[in-house]
Amino acid sequence: MSKVYVWVNDSLIPSDKANLNIADLAVQRGYGIFDFFKTIDTKPIFLEDHLDRLFRSAVLMRLELKQNRDEIRNKILQLNKNNNFRDSGIKVILTGGFSPDGFTISEPNLIISQQEFQIPKTMPEKGISILTHEYQRQFSDAKTLDYLQAIWLQPILKEKMAGDVLYYSNGIIRECPRANIFVVTKDKKVLTPETGMLKGVSRKHVLEISAGMFNTEARDVSIEELRNAAEVFITSTTKNILPVVEVDGYVIGDGNPGKVSRALAEEYNRIIYGS
Amino acid sequence: MSKVYVWVNDSLIPSDKANLNIADLAVQRGYGIFDFFKTIDTKPIFLEDHLDRLFRSAVLMRLELKQNRDEIRNKILQLNKNNNFRDSGIKVILTGGFSPDGFTISEPNLIISQQEFQIPKTMPEKGISILTHEYQRQFSDAKTLDYLQAIWLQPILKEKMAGDVLYYSNGIIRECPRANIFVVTKDKKVLTPETGMLKGVSRKHVLEISAGMFNTEARDVSIEELRNAAEVFITSTTKNILPVVEVDGYVIGDGNPGKVSRALAEEYNRIIYGS
Image 1 (cartoon, rainbow over the protein chains, first blue to last red):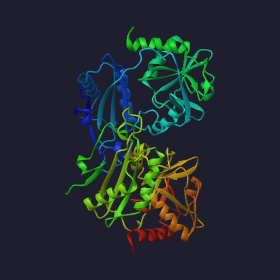
Image 2: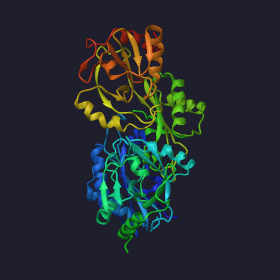
Image 3: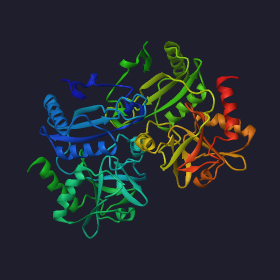
Image 4: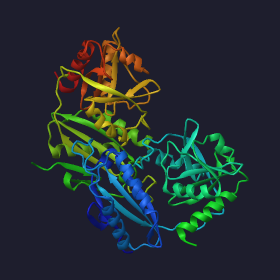
């Protein structure tokens, strides 16, 4: 197997040598942000949207990048060229940096890594079941490194054979740890949460498509509306549009992926994979 | 300057070479726990209490240590001997490990680092002012790496010239990011929160001392009770007993450290520094 390369600040190095001193604020205090996107046929998908969000997360979390947008984009493109993967995920992490007192934000360390992966190019025939969990992510507008809750919940999801977990707070559904959620009502309205969650790039593009095809609203959605939905699906970089057919044991619709989900997935996949 | 040594798993190495591969779940997802204690005159203070809590945090966060308590204690003592600091802080971090999928907990990486420091051996003559901030720490019984909120608030504290921030939730005071809080009522009752916060080792010992000297209760304490207090102080490994004389601009008591705080600090400092 050939080596996989990683950027650690200005060094392009093999992943097994991609180290960070333990003084970094990510290791010491879990402080940092990141973004993640995929390449299809070697092309980064929605790269500018992800760069937008990377910089937004950095500002929200008070991280001052020394690199500008062009420099980061160039590093991404060079990494992608070096690794030469067809289909992959690229992750850009900005940490709190080497803090002299272990508490004050310093110059961020930049890590850009890449992993080969395959995602089905069409929507799966079968939907997943999910669990709900009461939780409100802190700094929910920023894509922070904080996945304590999500990682801690993993064994419970496995035990209950759930494909994902949906956070809710104050009776309002928010997001899955790594995906956004959409609800299709019985009168074919497409709804997706708008507050207390991270605004995904996949969500953004699905919303745009949906607005041209269906009555679409981004607004607070209650657990009640979720349970009474005709269709439910989640969106993310690795999942594209993935139908949800069961929530906490409640069967959604007739238990199969619905027509609205399928219509949106076809259009979405056409955009990212080409026709 | 001589080199400071650090344990990274089973390697005792100079701190500038103490690296962790970026695949670790602390760097990728902020996942990990830690504990922190001090040495005075080369002797670790309340080491067994801190080992108790380290293992408790690990269990709560599903981290399975391969080292047993004796092995970790031995590593701490060897590090302390090697670095040969008189007064210092020792930090033991357990990360989520090298996760193959970037999401599943793996074998924890163990980092033990040490830093020389000096703490005043008597309670300061002047108290600090603090701000309150509505926030409930997730997994509050565990000492996790999650300090997003605390680090993010630092510039605001500086701007408002506050010495610390106190989290509260549902009208109940909880904890400072790195300290516990005590309230002395006007009828000389000593109160400290008991839920939704980390149970500090300093807190434990101050509680024990206080129970022998004053009417003492560990129970929910409201913001109202805090503002009406005769005295307020915080406790931590680096602060011992530190008086608080102002909360959100409200002056506590007569604005000076009180007699109960002083009596407790004298007894506490006698125990840790000797008479």
